Image (tube, rainbow, N blue to C red; front, top):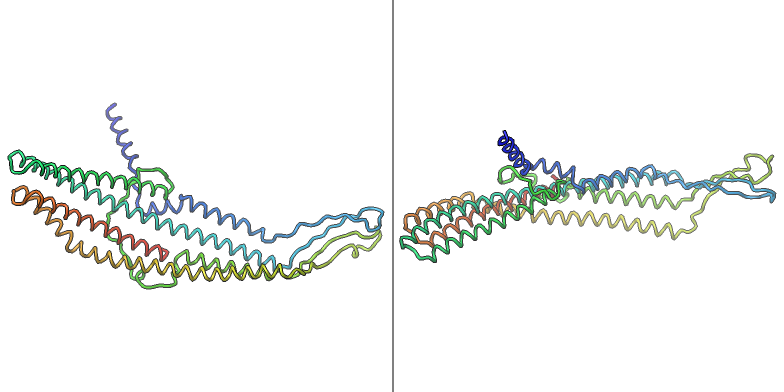
Amino acid sequence: MACLLLLAANSQAQTQSRRVVTLPEAIELATRENPQVKVARLRVDKQRALIPGALSLSGPELIFEAPTTTRFQPGILLPFSLPTVYKNQKKVQVQQVALSETERSTVTNTLRYNVRTIYNNLRYLRETINNYRQQDSLLLVFSQVTQVRLRVGQISRIDLLNAQAQQREVNYQLDQTRARVRSARIQLGLLIGVPNDTTLRVTGPFDRLGLTYSFLTTDSTFTRNPQTAFYQQNLKLNESALVLEKKRRLPNLIVGYLNQGYRDSPLLYRFRFGLSLPVWGWVAQSRIAAAETDVAIANSQITLNNYELQGDYDKAYADYLQYSEALDYYTTIGLLQADELIKAANDGYRLGSIGYYDVLLSLQQAFKTRLGYLEALRNFNQSVITLQYLKGE
């Protein structure tokens, strides 16, 4: 019974030590649990909470005067702007909420890109480790055959030392790759809201990602990219702010109640109506000029953003074409030649038809070809991921 409990505990520990996360799950967790998304969501909530404050009425002024010099009389004054000012203040705040929402979409799109990038890199590292393990297994057999041939006097001790040194080099590269895997797992954990978690495991085959034709057509607008929407919304916000500054040049109204007479004086004459005249015109004009500059800056940011997105798109598309040709070579020629080279080198050295250096060079070339294929596949998938990011997918 104790043995069964021990086996069950070990099984549970192994299950907990390996947390497999699929790519859709990782994207969903990142867009829900990442602190950047939470901060962006709180910024939206903050701007929404400020909408009622767009009314921003000035506080009433409570005053006491002694117009008859016999006693103080209470009074109250309430200055306020024209209704068009409050209407435009609310419009500006609503535009600010929309800007925060587009900022949240930009953060989400960037998180999807980062998760896909790291997930693609982890799949690449997983296959790289398998490649090094296969190379290590062949070198182990090669080293064992070398020891046999050394005992029968067919080769010198230097050949055995070289074979063992080559195997140690592969083990070193294997350890370095495992360290890169651990670092990538930590990065993935930070993105999905589980920092310092090195137990994450990726799943799914390391295959060539597909891309629809629409992604390969030139589109200078990038309308689905949240960053484009962000700068367009920023322009709307600054245009609304400019209209608001122009409305603020209008006079403010003043309504109040001041009892400036005796108790039996008519009630109508105790009210006050007035205007606050905007005589300091340079103050309003300077604010309008600054708002006009903000509109010009927002327009320039839209143009600059389009230039940057188009440049990134052209580079990603060039990478897509480059690594697509590389993958075509590896899948049609390179990998087949590598497999044949490994088989021929193994059989030839075991039978004694080729020498030590020939088989060593053959194995190195074959596994270098396999590693080149994995790197080309990773870079090709990365170009696809970048195109998806630029298109806002």
